Image (cartoon, rainbow, N blue to C red):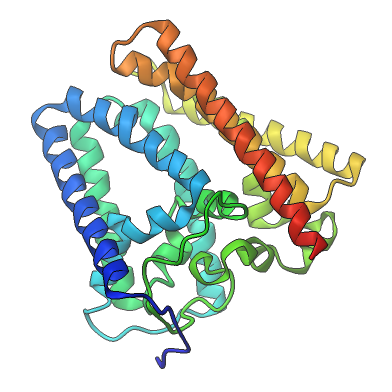
Amino acid sequence: MTPVQVAVRDGGTDRLWRAGRAVALTALSAVFAVLLLAPATGLAVLWGGLVPAIATSLFVTPVLWRGICPLATLNEAGNGIGHQATPSPRTQTILGVGGLLLFHVLVPARLLLFNQDGTAVVAAGLAIGTLAILLGARFAVRSAFCNALCPILPIERLYGQAPMVQVERGRCGACTVCTPRGCLDLAGTKNLAQIIGPSRRTHGWLLTPFGLFASALPGFILGYFMAPAGVGASAMQVYGSTLGGSVASVLVVQGIVRATSLATSGALLLLAAWSGATYFAFTGPAVARLWHLPTSTGVALGSLGVAFVVWWLVRARRTLHLSAAL
């Protein structure tokens, strides 16, 4: 494919991005080794350190994580195998819906397996990494995995609507528009408008795949943290809790948006903040338990997380109003 847009960067910036990718890939390999050799320590590092740090970085800007993500690096490595084709819009939609489903399957699986079994985490990580390579070998650039099937992509989209800092994309120096519509790296803050389409001008956005995901997310997170975990938990209990929370959340959001005629942009910001605040409120105490810290430390961490989300929301609303005024 012929490049149609080139990101002009100096050599130092490119070297910095390459170094970041190398560090991230090396760190992932090291975490996998610790998960196999010292599972308790590896699980604490992963769930009590790396994952909350990545989640926080998405509020700052998803470009940073997308620029160094090891799975994206593996996806790019797959581009060197075989001959890639551009996925059709139908294929892209199917892969995108598949990513939404993966998110709702893999996250609750933490309570049943991944929070307690380091070997299972490594096996799942290797399986997803292999899938990223294969999709990179089959489809052009990052069109199939990073821009469609990746289970973290919907979260990146939600917080990418109002990043706290603007950073030039770290990958795809020469853009071939492998993803014509809704590429987070190319469209930036406009990617949600492109993904949702004309329905964003009406309440129809609530019934789009992404609209349903965003509406369900606050209840999904609450259902996750309220679900039983560990040896005594059953799949029915865990998935029932997250599914029940998701359905309740969708119904509540549908009712509020339709009753108040809340604009799509404002509703998505509030959903992002509601979801983020719920996540950090529960994650703070969870991190403290993983590291055997006092309960007060967990409460403090959770409170800091919620305050950070409120700060993000205030900045995001101001940015949105300024953009509308221009």
